[in-house]
Image (cartoon, rainbow, N blue to C red):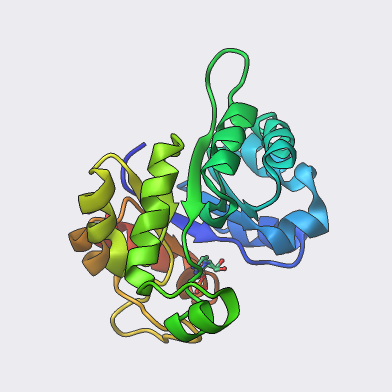
Amino acid sequence: MGRDVIIACDFASGQATLDFLSQFTDEKPFVKIGMELFYAEGPAIVRELKACGHKIFLDLKLHDIPNTVKKAMAVLSGLDVDICNLHAAGTIAMMEAAIEGLTRPDGTRPLLIAVTQLTSTDQERMENDLLIHAPIDEVVLHYARNAKKAGLDGVVCSPLEARKVHDACGTDFLTVTPGVRFADGDVGDQKRVTTPAKAKEIGSDYIVVGRPITAAADPVAAYRRCVAEFVG
Ligand code: C5P
C-alpha cells in the first residue's frame, strides 16, 4: 500500500458513519474506526464498511498479557481489516504474541502498528505518573525499535517524528500520523500539528485526518484537498 489519507470516522453510531461516507460517490476513502464506534456497533460496522469497499484501520490499541492479546488479534484478523494496532508499552513479548495471533493459517495478516507514547502524554506526566525518566523523544524511538524487533510494520506517531522513526527503523517501517491540519484551518485540541503537504515532506506514510474533513462544510472537497497535498 502506498501513501494515503485515512479519515478518522469518530462518530457515535454506524448510521452517522454511513451517512457521512455516503457523500463520497467517486472514491472509497481509507477509514479509521476507533473505540467509540467499535464499542457502539461491534464487528458489524467493520464488516459493513469493508463490504462497501473501504480499507479499514481498526484503532483499538490493545494492551494486555501476551496470551490475551494473541487471542484477541486472532479474532480481529478474521474481520479482514487492513491495519490494526496495540500499545508498544505492552512489551516485545506482547507484540510478538500479537503477530502470532494476527497471522492467518495461509500466512497473510493485516498490517500491525504500535502506539509509542500517546500524544496526550508529555514529559512531565511520563516522569511523574509512569516513572519513566528518559527524554520522551528517546522513549518514542525506543518503543519504535522494540516494535520493529517484534516484527511489527510501523508505528502511530506525530508527523513531526516521522523522519526520526524512519532514520531509526528504516524507510519501509510505516509511520501513521494523526495531528494534521490545513494551513488555514482550526487546530482545535491538537498540540503538535502539521499540514498534509508538510507531513509528506517529513515522510509520513499515512495521515489520519478527522475533523478537518468530518467537520468541513464540504467533506468531499476537504478530503480531495488532503489527497492532493499529501499524495500529490
Ligand atoms: O479530528 P482529528 O484530526 O484531530 O482526529 C485525529 C484522530 O487521530 C482521532 O481519531 C484521534 O483519536 C486519533 N489520534 C490522535 N493522536 C494520537 C493517536 C490517535 O489524534 N496520538
